[in-house]
Length: 479
Image (cartoon, rainbow, N blue to C red; front, side):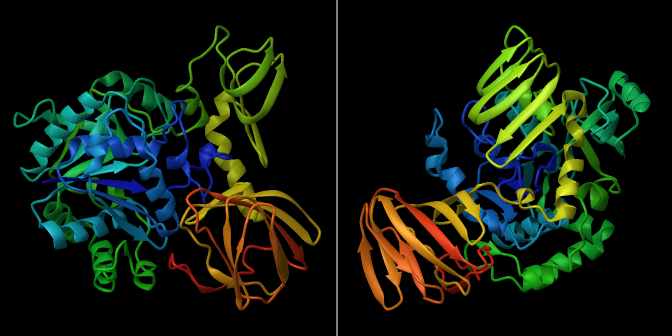
């Protein structure tokens, strides 16, 4: 059995301000309307013959589940009977702990002979037939005890990727080759040599191996990782779905990649050269390449008016952008943050994010629109002692029963029907009706209808932070 494992973790800081910690890179929509995560699931479903296991942060579980449910594809039949399993991390600990935990989960259910195909949630591959052929080759090798990675033939002397130096060809599964060594991100001179050599590949970060083989390799080369993850798994209630790793023990696991922990040190490692296209969408320049250019080389998502502009990428879905006399620029506009950068400096966006983190700036984590298990809210306006939100509650969904110490709230329903718990009272509030909740009053908002409930919330008080929430009950298990 081959089971795809989708690792959905990093924040994608080089794609700020669209990618943020609360709504990261895998959820970014491409021009065709599908997200990177949705495309990864479709790709995984096409090559696996078991369930698909997604390893992600517990804060992203409901968003991930909704993203999968929202897939609109030409062949939805491939997803109709697909079993979707989840393994939720209380915090990010890199790829080695994630893969170790997934392997332990699969060992418990399916045994050591199960083949794991480890995929990143934020890669883009268009040639699915060639991808499937590469997976078949990797699976064959994995069943013979190899730890397999996928190498991307370099098209440019890229300094932002690690490289794999390939050794002798393997007769057992051509065109695979043994791995001679892994190479850290090189300076430009070495990158040029590697790109021209014919036996160096970009390290794609995708892997294939049997459960027992990767666990044994971790026991040899990274015992501190597998021992800590084993302790965590023993403390985790694997019968409670979705499976959420025990927070206290997982916090003690080392933050380390599978490359450092195992792949660079193990002896029986193979690389399958990719005959498929591949992009890790690691920068705005890479994302710009997914958009068709006009005659002047400009690529536009949204509405833009350009005069004397060349080779620019403009991503502005919410308002018109007008630009005159510009060259080689990236312009990324969101409701609360604007990025302007030279295309040659696309990799440096992470420096901006670093500065924002040091300032404790809210735009590192959240957008104006924030998604929750029950729906979403959008901050429309805020100022001293007030904040105005647009709240959308999905049919059948419910916010937690909660109270606030420092703020009162006034709810006005503009569409649908709300069931409001306001202290001891439970009332239906219909379109154009409202309910006022004084500070300190337990309250809950539910949608008993079959359409979205849309309402405007006006907050007032001395402190309006999101951490002024005391949850008394929550159907989604949030504290």
